[in-house]
Image (cartoon, rainbow, N blue to C red):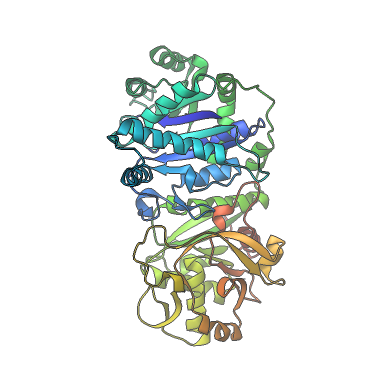
Length: 528
């Protein structure tokens, strides 16, 4: 196994995750099998209970792991599936070590950061790397390891020490360190290298040396600036890679290619430099011939909360040569007139009762005005509530999550009495059986599909027949649980209890999103 470790300096939020995913894509394009590990130094066991408005989207993995949004970037860029083993946190590491100590696994030893914590980290990285297999059952050859946070953070010290030990254990040729750093501009517009120099110094103090430096900046790094960084940081000029802000994250691997990333990285890993397969680049840079405007009715005012939805719309749009322009509408502040010029309306997932009535009003508008609608998770539940209120006749229809009224949406039976909130929802992959003549069965080309879930509530069984008698069809089920609804005689009124966005890829767009974008284009009302 070969390891490419990606660290960050100067400040967080530089795009280490996109850089790591792009390096993986560059290697895959040359025929190598790649997996990845994301290390998050926070004390949480996972991202499931973290505020998405502060930390970004909680990405759900196939085994139900609730992970950092960078795992989503890895899956989309590398076209692979990962598990909760591929997201390490301080909480996971320390919890495991403490449990082992209580069990007596350390034979009376004084448990310390070195070697016990660092050994746990190394063991988990190696386990995730060596036990991953692709859809054909083949094992990975290279593992990309991203260490979250910034070099110098107290939280990340044990992880950096662990990878320092891994470097010594692996040796040159099987271990490469890529350091992502910021090159800010001064008032004259010149790129400044001093923060990068200090960041590399901090890395060296921990016993680590960067093999490549990726400089994030608003302007391309000039040759003279690269030479300056090379001199101060002891890397070859060719190993200083310029990474300016791209208009689309899927363009980043191409930009790193043009900067010579593969020409430096492959010899360091002692890998042959095969001619790359550029089909993925051609796919993600396909030109648009159409444009539509989609309104997303949001509970959270941060776009990163919905990053997988944004990407799924982009994937579907690219396949249909249609640029999707997103209009973000606050569920508590938008007005109905804001919906008139949209080509489609999307109701995403979420929790709590804030903004619920605004979402329901948007669903009513879509249903009554034949506006294409896609509801996801909470959007599925609210579509049922809206129909129950305005068509079936339950004026006080609601969810037990929201408050008093007729509980059309109820707690899942297995959730009754659950006290611990972390990792206890209905999570991960479940099968969905689709009605053969449904829209989604035709879009999927199958009557049974696997999709990822994250919810505690379901349509209350005793109301299902009454709702269907009024015209709303439940066309996807998992046993007695309702998974998909469709409204016949409507351009596209579809909602899913699952999250199809989590399995969408540039190479294989999500079927519900394909149908939604296609219907929005056919019913286009917006023009520039």
